[in-house]
Amino acid sequence: MPKTSLQDATALRDETMLRRVRHLGSARDGLKEWQVQRWTALALIPLGLFFTISMLSLARSEQMTAAAWLGSPVPALLTILFLAALFGHAVVGLRSVFDDYVHTRTRLIAADLLVRALAIILGGAAVLAVLKLFLGR
Amino acid sequence: MERPLSPFMFPVWYRFQIGSVLSILHRLTGIALTVGSILLTWWLVAVAAGGGLFAATHAFIASPIGTLLLFLWSAAFYYHLCSGIRHLAWDAGYGFEIRTANCNGYAVLAATALLTVITWLYVLL
Image (cartoon, rainbow over all chains, first blue to last red; front, top):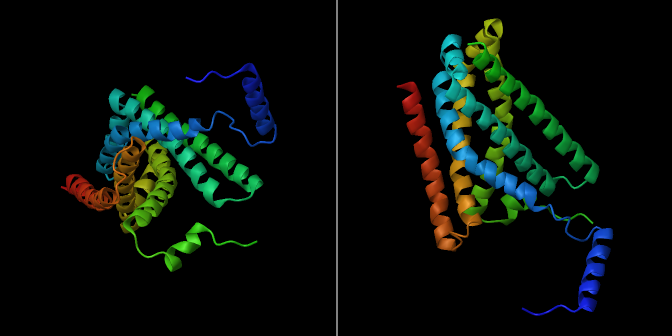
């Protein structure tokens, strides 16, 4: 392994600092969204399959049947986990689409904020619905 | 300067390639599923609320348009799932050879059709 002299290290640091000041350098958190996208994707393989098949079977059934299913412990837990992974995955996914097609910084931030707010509201409402059925059994 | 951007390149300048079509489909189904999650939330809230809201939701789901939406949603889900697994394999460093990528591209389409049909047979029968 080559040794860096003190002078080299200083030069490297100065260059990194300058790049960061000029917004050219790495912010060192760029990998976070990439990771969130992958981890939620992995979680959604079993959770998505579970929820999709259950939901499609229940979608045409009566309210009592659907409520009884959603209110029982295991489906309630898995549905809440599914919703968390789903909305997290959707936020990161839509952001990556916006990154490619929305070229104005202001619009990009506005679109991202809107999607995040909607995801929190929808996710909150959906989780609350499941909790109501679970707690009200 | 106005430069052509990728979506406008697609129909005119590019010949058909399975890779690019699947890539665009992955994004489109992702967006569609996100929009679908609004309906999903609506259904969950309707089940929790019961009464008139559930009756209206139930009538909509049972209607031809509702059933069609549900079918399209499930097809989009299975496509995004299979294509997503293909993406995860790439992330792990597998399947980059053109021949392999083309083959498993068609496999994704076949698996989507198969899973959608099996699920609906299970749901309806």
